[in-house]
Amino acid sequence: MAEAGINEAQNSPAPEAQQTTDGFHLVIDALKLNDIDTIFGLVGIPITDLARLAQAEGMRFIGFRHEQNAGNAAAVAGYMTKKPGICLTVSAPGFLNGLTALANATTNCFPMILISGSSEREIVDLQQGDYEEMDQLNAAKPYAKAAYRVLHAEDIGIGVARAIRAAVSGRPGGVYLDLPAKLLAQTIDAVKGQQSLVKVVDAAPRQIPAPEAVKRALDVLRNAKRPLILLGKGAAYAQADASIRALVEKSGIPYLPMSMAKGLLPDTHAQSASAARSFVLAESDAVLLVGARLNWLLSHGKGKTWGAPVAKQFVQIDIAPTEIDSNVAIEAPLIGDIGSCVEALLEGIGDDFPQPPAGWLDAVAQRKSKNQEKMAATLDKNPTPMNFHSALRAIRDVLKTRPDINVVNEGANTLDYARSIIDMYQPRKRFDSGTWGIMGIGMGFAIGAAVTSGTQVVAIEGDSAFGFSGMELETICRYDLPVCTIVFNNNGVYRGTDVNPTGGADVAPTVFVKNARYDRMMEAFGGVGHHATTPEELTAALLEAIASGKPTLINAVIDEAAGTESGRLTNLNPQSAAMKK
Ligand code: ADP
Ligand code: TPW
Image (tube, rainbow, N blue to C red; front, side, top):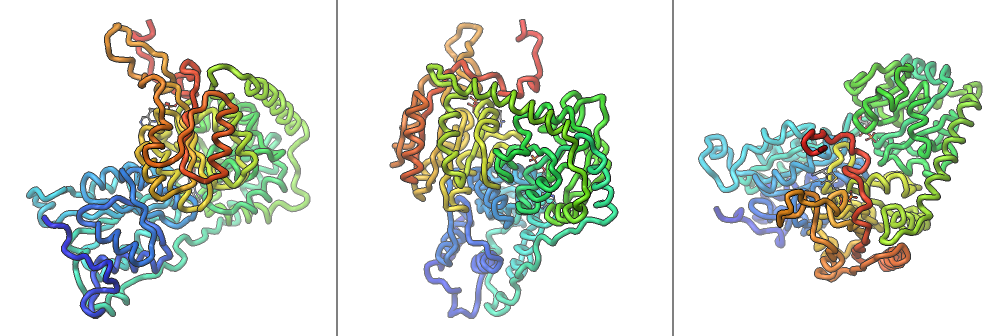
């Protein structure tokens, strides 16, 4: 099969003296009409000309080395902007590579659209063996919020409109849009084509909560003796920053941010209870959840973490009604968009609304300062080689001076320690492994965040985590993006000290090449590499990277014995009786 037989991108506008248009043009026109200006993708049959045309028509096309990373970039762009990020791939294998990112976006409630070219329906449906044959639409369905296929050029406008609305309305998620090769080459009358395009009106309508639900929520909070507010990444996504801050401050209730909600209020805020996390989860008697699910990251809302057997009352704000009672009974569900729900609560909190009892606030404050003192002592140590704490202290002190910097973070120990040590000061600046605890988001998220914000990104990466997307260093260099990647190099997954119990030649399953120089990978593509063995060297390298804005990788040498198995999730590993001996 030849590459789709048109190449008119350079000759745009549309072919045949502008009397006809085609599927390629209509897809681009439909995206542009809806203010989508960037596509993340990887070219090949049948979408190469689509990428060319996008660029020729003034869109940005960011080409990746693997579709999963392009998909992750699209997902993070969607999370940052509330507009669906677009990922473009070829059929079957390219589609499947992108599907992991689509599934991860759906899981995390990030709006994105995966657009994949596909083979001819007639051949796919009879399983006659086409080039990259696959029933992509059905493969995508279980992992996407919605999946659509367009067969006629005049339906492209509707197809794109449906995909956009599905991605951003209600609970956001990943949408798959299947574009067969034949569709892209189809021609139709240009005027008819333009008329078929749809500008989506009010893609994510406000959803106002019911007054009785607001009253119920306020009653729970009013009667609480030890209230707590828990902010999740849904709250960050909602871009209701000022209202959320007003609610926290007016109510006087201590709050905890989930990892990607950090910075919604500055982590240094007096009401932040992050440093007393275990204490407030266990001791609170009423919890207001704002865009946070009671999933594994919150111990499913029950058990010792939550102070069981003492009963707890939950108020939950969410746009998805089926999220309510997912794990424990919710006394006061508040269904609607976070902005509207928070504003409704604020209206109900008059001047007579009781502040939380002083005893509770004192207890939280005391626990915070005790834990902060302990942490400061740990961070002050200067072991050789560096450990996670001394390296993160160096990074923390630099990032403090630049609150606008985007932080990407993955790994096990690297993720767990960075989450608590690196303070965030502005909303939607922290992007991490999220709901699945997935490895491999690093360079895709970093590129997506850099392209979307135009500002500096610092990616704090475990050496294993980095490896999943490391080839995108070339992409970072190609587009000259202000991304500084810091690889926490401890020679393996979790740590580098495991041994093969048989004494055989193969290293243990968790171990990598010793003393790898990831900085030299960066140099291979023309970026800047640094090798840092002390906090001082790390500080100097990071400052240089930020000052220059150049693509940089810092190979930060961490004690290979410093990490623990699975970071803080050691207890989730099923234990083999044989291995314990
Ligand atoms: P975290 O991992 O930070 O705890 P989750 O991803 O578990 O956060 O939860 C996010 C929740 O926010 C989801 O249940 C989602 O339905 C909800 N959500 C997302 N956007 C909005 C919005 N605009 N309004 C209300 N709820 C939202
Ligand atoms: C797609 C399992 C969880 S954490 C991790 C793996 C492989 C890497 C930990 O080592 P790293 O960090 O990055 O060197 P550190 O700080 O502990 O030294 N495949 C996928 N996702 C997950 N979560 C895994 C495997 C895993």
